[in-house]
Length: 54
Image (cartoon, helix red, strand yellow):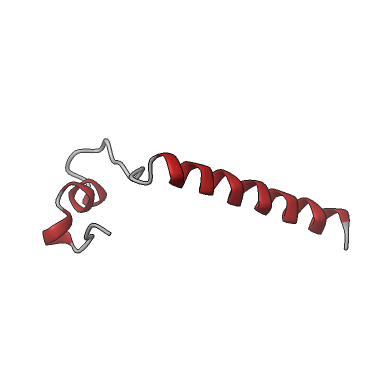
């Protein structure tokens, strides 16, 4: 494997580990501060916009 490929694998492992750690502490991390945006509407009104809990 090239050094580039090894670096990519190491980065992926590090990110996977970080994601696992974040998910264990607070899985509800999707937020939006732009009131009136479509994303803000989907996050703050999950039933009518199709994003359901779970």
